[in-house]
Every structure is written in structure tokens, then in C-alpha cells.
Image (cartoon, one colour):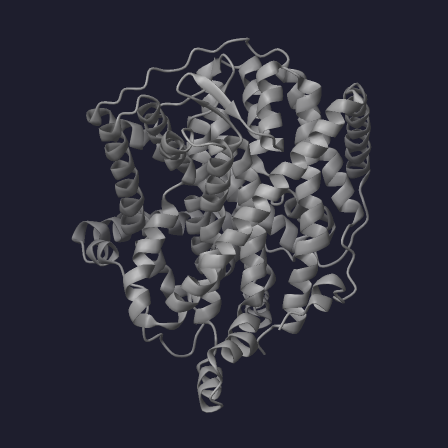
Length: 573
């Protein structure tokens, strides 16, 4: 059981919360933000947005556009994951920089960068192209970190005997990747891809409805369709838009992700076959199709064989780097050039930050505090209902059979798609936008917690359940001594992800253009959007960096300490 002393005076293992790599990464983020803000000054003062048709016949095309953006971002994420994760796993020198970089980047609220990315790209590219690229970049950054961590962890945990076998057979880089690394990492890669794809819907919808003052960066898609329908109060169009979105999510699940899960079951390392392997009707249909068998035997297999023969000749066997090596003069020269560029960039960024008057820094502090309160409220509300519901689903198979499919569909519907509909109701109430902002944050956080609670409840060993029954523990004693301690690691993992989702949601929840007028509340997300609309780029840089620094500090000083306690004190072993 977690006591107040554990929370206030935790005693985790000796591990530095901050490393030199963290500060280098933060400087790099500040320099990149400064470069984007500098380009944003040249952005066009007004951008004419697209005409969004509310005819139901336009929905298939809009759904195709939205899925196309998601697919392009996922392809980039997959390439980045395979290359970045492999470099970090096999090069100790690269690992010391790449992993802190990844750790900080996954803590950064991605939507805080959307105004900078959009405005900087629109300064050098046509507005439509800039909006499309910005949406793909935004979705990429929401997908890549999770997938990369999963792939890196898989490569680092390959059993020693399999590594030895690959050396004995002298597998080169390509053959090792194909016959060892990819099969071993396939299951976590697919599961993390599913989670990243589901999370990408949130950011896609945010990108498709983004406007800044007179700059309309909306993109034709399901998100823009739902926003336009809500603006016009067209409830019939809202219904058709939500139905199309849900059908698209269900179709992708049934036609792509479920077949991939059923196919990946062959890569499990186990001595006994599972009693309940994943199944898919569409995978069985494809597996029994004669055309697929002909395609596999006549086209794919010969091409794969030729590729293997070419790779064996082109890339001979080579041992992986196992320890630190001496730097070459080229690496030293590149390091000096990068260091010089970083020092110049941070100097210019500091010059821009120092130009802000004191009252604006005070406004940033108040805005961060207001958003932090909303994040805490949404997190507490989410915890209040996800713990009992998640435990019920995870411990009662009959209830899980009914509720779990419903929960999965509800979790896949992005909160940003429903937000314009929520505003129709809340803006008529006193303090309506405050309530709507907290509700949007709640919708962006609760599913991370719920699925982690379900996973934790499912993982409670059956023998411990029998023991608690034999001891005739009361309901409260069972929760205090078994359920809550078993859930604690899962709760911390879910809360870290959920808090990041809440900070992200603040960007679109605290400053809203709706029905031809702008509505805003005090908050750092509102301040970022307001600074962008006014063209106050020094304030935009300062507020974005403040938000990033706040989230990273909270993660390192609070969540990481709790994670260490969970790892050491509440681990099942």
C-alpha cells in the first residue's frame, strides 16, 4: 500500500533524474523553436481556407484523405522507428544521446509545436502544402516515440542464445534484421503501432481544424467536416460525420490490425501453444485465398530470395559495436560544427526571450498554473471512474465480453472530433468553456488510464485471488492489500501518458474559434494560440518553452520517482 511517507519521501534507487544529455536536448528544442519562430515572422498575414461540403456524399472522400494522412505519418514513423531504435540499441555512444533525446521528446506536448510548424512551413511553401506537411509531422511525432521505445526494448531483450546463433551462422545486417530482430520484435511493434495509430486520430483532427486569426489552415477531412457541421448547428451532418468516423475506425481494426495480430502469433517464443490465440476472420479469408497463395509463391518468395542473395554479397558479416570506440576526426569536426550552431541558436533565442517585459512572464506563470489545475482535475476525475470500472472489466470475464469491445470503439473516437459538438452545449452555460476544456482533457486522458487498469487487473495472479478468498478478506481489505498494490505500476504508467494527453489537449481546448467568434480562458494553451494569432513570436517562444519545461520537470521530479517506487516495491516476482 502506498503511504503518504512513500509519496512525500520516496527512496528510489540511486539514479540521476537529469543527465547532461537532457540539457543538450532541451537546448536543441529551444534552438529548433527559435528557428521556427524566426521563419514564422515571414508567414502570410491571411490564409483562405478550403470550402467544406456537408453533403453525405463527400464523406467517403474526406475519410480517404484523413486515412491517407495517417498512413503517410505511420510510414515515416515506422522507418524512423526501425533505424533510430536499432542505432540506439547497438551503439553505446549513440545510445547515450539518442535515448535521453527520445525520453524528453515523448514528454513534450506535441500540439504546442503546431502553430510554430504551420507558420514556419507556410512562410516557405504554399499554404495547402504547408498545412498537409504540418499535419503529417504532427501525427508522426504522436506515433514515433511510442513505437521506437517498444522496438528498442525488443532489440535489447533478444535472448543471448539467439544472438549467439546469429553470430555462429554469420548473419549479416540484413539477414539478422529479417530472421532475428524483426520476428522477435514483431508482436510489440504491432501492439505499439495500434496504440500509436489510435493516438494519431486525436492529433489528425486537431490539425484538420486548426485556424489562427485570419489564417485558415483547415484541411478537407473528417475533422473539418465535423467542425463545420457544429458551426452551422447541422445535427444531421454531425450524425453522418461521427458515423463515418466510427465505421472507418472499425473497418481499419477488422481489416488491418486484427489480421496483423493473428499473423504475428507465429512469432511468440513459447514452449506450449496458447489456448486462446488471437483470431481474425479476414486473416483466415486471405490465408485460404488461392490468389494470395499464388502471389506469395510466385512473386513474393522469389523477390525475397533475390534480395537476400544480393544483401549477403553487398553487406558482409560484421560484429556489432559492443563498447566505446575512439572518435574519428570527421566525428569531432561534425560535433564542433553542431556545438557552434547550438551556441549561436541559444544565444539568439535568449536575446528574444529577454525582450519580453516582466508582466508577460508573470502572465506565462499564471497561465501554466491554470492549465496545471485543469490537468489535475481531469486526471483525478479519470482516476475516480477508471479504477473501479477497469478492475470490474479485468476481473469479470462475462462483463469484459460485453464492455471491452464498446470501450475499444469509444476510445478510438478522437476527442477533438467530438469537441465542436460539446461546444454547442457548453458555450451557453456560465463558465462553459472552462467546463468544456476540462471535459476535453478528460476525454484525452481517461482511456490511457482505463486500459492500463484493465491490463493490471487482468495480470493479478489467480493464486493470489484464491488466497484472498480463503483468508475471508473484506472488500476494503482486498482492495487495500491486493488490488491497489497490484495496480500501482499500471496506474503510474497510465497516469504519465494521461497527463501528457491532457497538456496536449489544452492547446485546442483553451482557445477556440467557433461560430465566427473566438472564445478563450486563462491557460498556457490559450496563451500559445493567442500569441500566434497576434504575431507575438517572442511570447510564442517563451510560452511554448515554459510549457515544455513544466511537463518535463513534472515527469522527472514526480512521475519518475513514483515509477521507481512502483518498479521496486510493487513488482510481481
